[in-house]
Image (cartoon, rainbow over all chains, first blue to last red; front, side, top):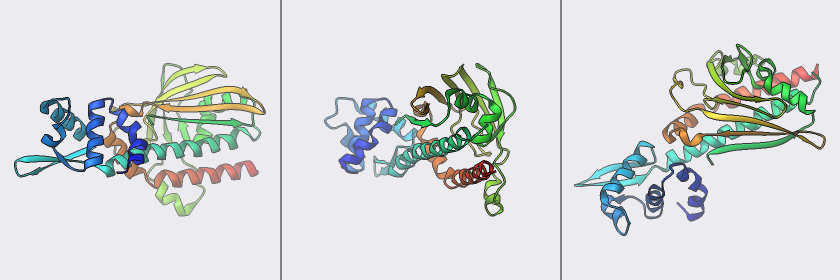
Length: 110
Length: 162
């Protein structure tokens, strides 16, 4: 994922409401699939905390963990994220259409 | 992006727009729903999707939404200024029970503007809806509502041409 796309997606990440989780997602964006050890490297939080956040992200459908030998490798579910953004875009266009129906309704006589 | 906001100027007086959004019958006509009762602040209102039958070729595709029950919760009625309710955003899948899921808040806000009425529609609270659900809803809804919206537009165009 390119940086500008990451910035565009930031509000969705913000919806998760936690800077650590945003950091994990950003890291998976930039570096691709990572193990817990890699994700914890250089981070100011413990391995347990990272694991907890990954589980929360997995529950939200944002990341997926798969076993590679003894380790779990975590990767971003880009499709899920894009679909979630698409959902808001869809509702937004439904409002546009509803407004045009309201316009037709009120701008003609009772 | 946890809320959607739309702002338009309608060429109609504030009281006309107010009636169109606060009178459940009028609301139903342009929105495409049939509500069982009036909007009362603090009370729920039930109804169903009742799309207009104007095009046989797409009637089949639309059939799946016809009659789908809905329940909205009216939050505020502030005459000529603000109308607000909670709902399950465009929840039209009859096989899904939305009743235990978080609702979003829809607000209609009116203000006088040059040549008419400024209408602001804000829908908020999407952050409470699980990402998983949003993604599924997007995949499931694709197509169905677009068709229905086209039908209603056709119907209204025909009505206003009379």
